[in-house]
Length: 515
Image (cartoon, rainbow, N blue to C red; front, side, top):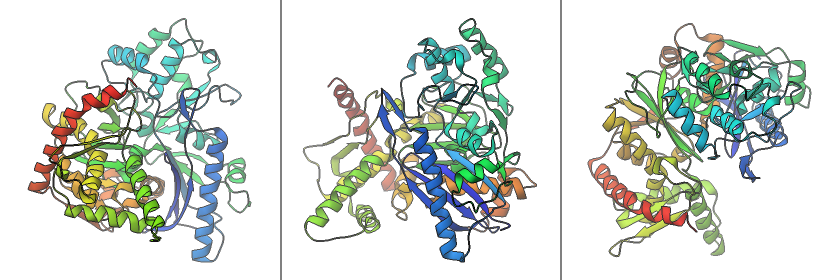
C-alpha cells in the first residue's frame, strides 16, 4: 500500500509500532510490553527479548490494520526505527554480542565519564556509549580486543532488518560528541590517545556511519522481512530512514526542531530538549549537548525518574477500589486521581515527594529511594498527595532547566510535551508550565510519542523537499490540533514553595543511600 509510513520505537516499558497515512494521521498501532532486568550489576534486555518485542509489536500492528481495513499489511512506503538513546551494544566481526546490552539506566561509568569530560572539555554523561566503552577499556574487560562494532538499541534493530550500520545524527550524538553533522574530529583524536596501545581497533571504525534526517539508510532485506513478519506477508525492499533515539523522535513528534523551541518527553524517565539559539558558554555536568535529527545543537536535561512511582500509587489505589467492589479500568483511575488535583493546594499542602527508584545525577543521588515527608502543619488529603507525586515527576527536570535559564540565559519560546504523563488532558501540562514558567503545548498526538515521531521521519525521507523544521511546521503540524497552557501566577508560586522544600529534603534522600 502506498503513502503509509511505519515508525517503531523501543521504550523502557513498551515497544510501539505506529502507522500513519499521507495526511500524517495515525491509522494503526501495535504495542508490546516488556521490562528491563537487573543482572550481574547491569540493567539490561536480552537479545531474545529485543527480537520478541520487535515481532510482537509488529504483529499487533498488523492485526490492528487488518481489523480496520479488512486486508493484510504487506508493504509501506518507508520505515524508521527508534529506541532508548545511549547504552552499549558491542559485537565482534561475526556479529556475536560480546557482553550483555548495557542500557542508559546504568550509572556505572563514573570514572570514564569524568576523564572524558575533562579531556574533551565537553560533558560526557555516564549514559553515553563512549563512556561505557572507555569504562570497559579502563576495567580491561576481556572482550575489548574483539570489538568490531558498537551501537545502540535503535542501531542494532536497524542492522537486523537492513544489514546497514548507520545512525541518525541525533542518536549518534548520544554515542560520541558531534560537530558539523559528524563525530567531532578533535575528540576522536583525543580518544585515540587515551586508548593507544590498549586496543587493536580505531574508534572511527567501530562507530556507526552518521546520517541526517531525509537520507536513505538501506532497505528491508529478505531476511529482515522474514524475521519481522513470521506470516511471510510483508515484502522486502522497503526503504529505511536513519534510526533515531527517543530524544530525536520526541522533538519531531512535538514539532520542536526549530531554534528556541523545546520539548519534554515524560514516561519512565523525563527529559527536556531545547534547540539552542546560541552555543552554551560553559560546560555543565547536568546538561548534555546533543543534536536534532537535522544536526542542530540541543541542550538536553535528562532525569532517570518520572512516572514509575506515580504509576505505583495509581495501581495501589486501583487495588483498594477492587477490594471495596469498585472495579474500574486504569484509564478511569488516572483521570479521576489526576483531575482531583485541581482541589489541591498549590504547594501540595506541605507534602513533598521523591520519585527516585534509581539514582538521579541532576540532584547528586547515586542510589534512589522513594521518599515522602510532610510538615507538621500540612494538609494531608488525596488531592494534595497526588499533586505532590505529579510535582515530583517534574521536580528534578526543573532544577536542571534552572541552569539553562539562569546561568546561560537560554531562551525558550515554548515547550511542547508528549508521553504518558500527559495522557490526562491538561493536568500534568499545567504543572509543567508552572514548573518551567513557560507556555507548554500538547498535541493531539501526545500519547503516541516517539513511534509517531519516527513515522514522521520515515515520511520526511520520502516527501521532504525542505529543511526538517520547516517541513514539520508547514506540512505536518499545520494540520494537527494542539492545546497550549500558560503559567499561572499561583501555580508558579506554589511550585517554588514546593521546590524549596524539595531541595531542603535532598540531604535526607542522600542519607538513605547509606542503608
